[in-house]
Image 1: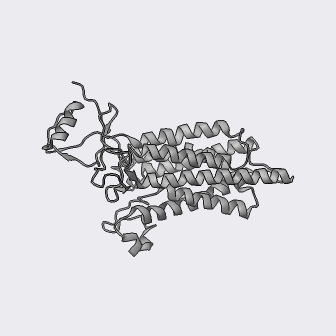
Image 2: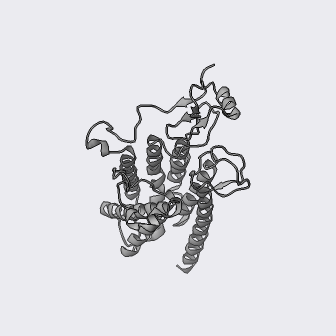
Image 3: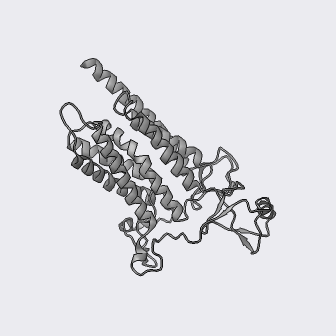
Length: 326
């Protein structure tokens, strides 16, 4: 019987040059951020040429979009890091020593790690605040610019999730699907357990040790595809067809929330947090036993969906009111 799973490629490492001194500090995840921001810039530049950032009193420039993105990036990184350390960290380390939040070395080993641990939802809040601050400072229509940016974000986001895949992190729950993948850092299970033996038999996995690394959903790639590529295509096709400023911002927020909510059923929650709300408090996190067990990500996605509905309704009513006034 042929194996019905994929082994995580042994040649993939978090470091780009793992065996070369100094160059070993360069990591794929950081490079993916560079690709993400570069992609966002080129898409915004395309929207700039299409006149989507102009108004009757002002013609936007390339310098404007560079400064706009830079402001958003700074607040995005700050928000993503703070949110990650306060919401997802359960050790209490960062609450006791907040100066370590932006310290790029492991406190115990002093090994360079970069800013290990970034939260999308924190980045969303921080990036939005950055864009609002820039627009207010330069007296530009906030949601006109945010609409343009949310078209670019999913394309860049795709690289971020590919970075997670290259890090071998944020993997999914165990699966018998033929594209299931064995991630090196994933929890291993005792070969003496009957269910482990049965699971391995179903996928043609030969058990040769006391601990078994079962295949999992490559949920990082699910997210890269649906929250990245699919959402980008939808927003890209609608960028010239929107009915009011704020429409695309609302669609992005709702769309991301919906896609991520359902993908969370395939992604394994953080082991030290588990479920925020659970129908079965004893349910294992490595497999989905109930649709009523909700992770932290799902709770935040529900808030995103509600927030997106609020943005859509609010900006629509604002646009309608001011249209009647003119």
